[in-house]
Length: 589
Image (tube, one colour):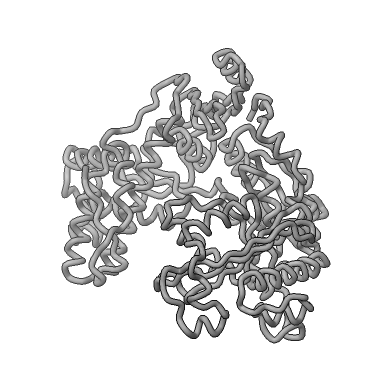
């Protein structure tokens, strides 16, 4: 694939100017907050009685905030005993309508910290919503959650604020008053950060994703992401010998790769892969679609041990309708230039067999193997006796009648799936009425395999027949992404630079695009010049809202009454519990 050199986006340049490993904790301003309330749950009508907060940066206190709040109701006696806040103390105090905006102004631009943050932040968000205020996009750190990952029973008996304050020697003793508890939480936060610094946690991002399940050895490898750009592309994890272990793609290479060294990555096999990795190689791409396509090609080429999908695109199966005096359906591994009709490709032989069963249930064509002479003289099989085969072998049907069935079958494969859909839906309804739900579900699976295959064949075959399709779409960053597709293969990708002549730039991109060889372009059947997976990714992009066709060479069409509309009806909807496991029938257009 040839790509035009992308013009760097100013957005990426701003990101590159940031600290490459995230935001250092010393540069973060934390707002440590604590609330006192009339009860444990805001859903029960409980209200805030006091807000206390301490703003700290670089280990130094830069401001404090404290206010009592009139809860507009009576404070329960046991709450007054616990906190020392009485009804008389809140008389004349500001209501939450005034106290909350003052706190939000104090905390603006900070990272919120609280001990058991869901409680405190939940109350604040609730009252912000009640006032019609948009909740600021605060980062939140929960010291209770963090302590549970760091503290052992030897350090403290539990992770309550009072226990942690005592264990870390806080100069402020928590006493269920908001400001005192916030001050104690500040000391606990700093003590936790000091401990985590010893295991390589130095940034806000690392603090947020820290978990004891991530080994120190894995954390030390986070430097492998250092040389990667904040741009779409493909990344390859390699071992000491240069063997590719894993291939992935992302819209932001550096950010994505860094997650492999934090708690964000929870797949156990990825932990094994990271332990073996010695380097990460990045390939920057002009557009996310180009990155997706390159990922598929690299996986197919390297067949990495830790990738599970797309490693063997060559292992496909097709359903073939033969061209002979008495045509039949068969499963084959490749498409030949033999004027036959093909359905597929299928990713697995099992899916192809399910599709074949659905077709045989609808069309009674012969299922025996081998070619049959124009005037056969064979003995009929059991299928003929069951009425599931027209039995041309013993002369039970003439070629004209058999040919009419085959023509309907060919039309079903290439244009309209209605016959199969109607037949399988009827069988499903009969079985469901007899409460034979497992059998009905099996029929549903066969129908789904057929409809997906028919849609895939019609869509891929149409795109593969086009010598060239050029399309553009305005991406989220406002720039125009352009792709050149030749016979279903992505041949070039790029982004129109700001201020460039769009027509001239697209002409240059087309001139430098990868050429599809005539032998590849002339492939028979629905096989594109790329793998089916690649062409489907391209189709998914082409079918997005906002895509504009710049140039189409050939005819890019799809049957109006084809299989694709049926795909939206395959998802099961609400149904009686007795039919759980049995999807809804597919409607006929």
